[in-house]
Image (cartoon, rainbow, N blue to C red; front, side, top):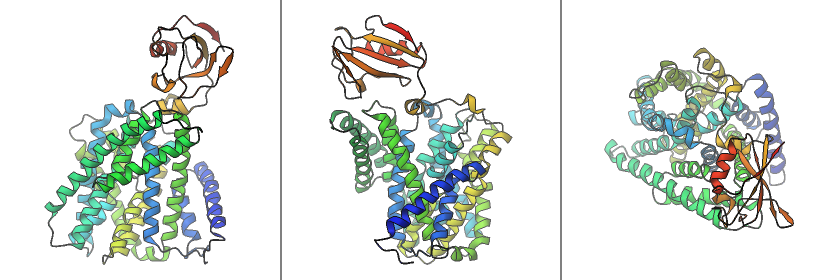
Length: 495
């Protein structure tokens, strides 16, 4: 089929609609939605019933990078620092040493069972060395898995922060494949520059972004998510321009912003949640279109062998060695090893050898695609079952909500108080966003003289304002009073 400008919107919207409907059905039967998105893309492609011919790795790579920006940024916004802080060292160890060890052990195995050179083997190992943020975030959240002992924040932190390491390794070994006269030592400065500049840029742009979001006054609430999108892309591209890792920078920037009080934060979070899902669908559809199923068949045997080694040996080796210095139960280590989901990120990284034009680029791409599909099918469909087997799952009713969950929840509040702001209150002449208000309480209305104001983060509190505050339990009002610096006694109403 020849895709023209007249029918591209129709085809795209139909594929998007079909993906959403298929995702709803797949959830009911326990099939990961991501595999459905890939399948629909493959069916619509030149080897499928759709007959759409798409063979543009450069465009696919561009779509992949843009999509990963949204997916990583949304995941960072949704990351609770309070939950992550106790397991920060474990998460960093998994996302750096764990990724490196996985790449090295898988690369050595590929070298021993194929005719790849050592650098080509390590390139393949690097491409599939990281767990996929899109796969982990979507599958864990769609299944609403409640896990014991900070397992969930560990897995989400690892998947959100390990793509930079895999990216650096991929670029480094691709360079060695192209320029075989260089030594492995030559890639160490590149690695250090990428990680250090990326980390510092993430923190710096996070602080700058908070200042811009809260200080700039926009006339329309809907412009704030647009502003954040602009800041996200500036963070990524500026970091990359200065030689840092843009993926690491946007994730750190988003984690920082997720812990701050921002104007219209709820709107921003909801918008990015929807955009992350949209980008996941677009990304997997695009990669499905890019793949020719007939080209994968010759590599299914070696692909399955490499995939099984990755799942059952390389990933556990990386996890167990990187966590050997931390006190952790065996069943927790085993579950972390099992949640080594590969998804869209390795396929996107596999487009780099294609664009570089190396000899075995097509073979690497098809093997990587097969590895990603088998990982999602084998590991993604069994996360709940394995969690129960290893006794690391909690009943759904015991699942704790993080601050982002509470902020975005539409649950009715159980308590209401009217709080009068006096001249000695710290809140006077402060914007709501600057008060440090508790996450499970909201200012529903402000009475100012004879008028009522619907509040948002940019509203400034004035003397003699009466705040109508809703909270989910009475004890929360102690935090409210602390934020307002003990204002006058409140009138109490039960809803």
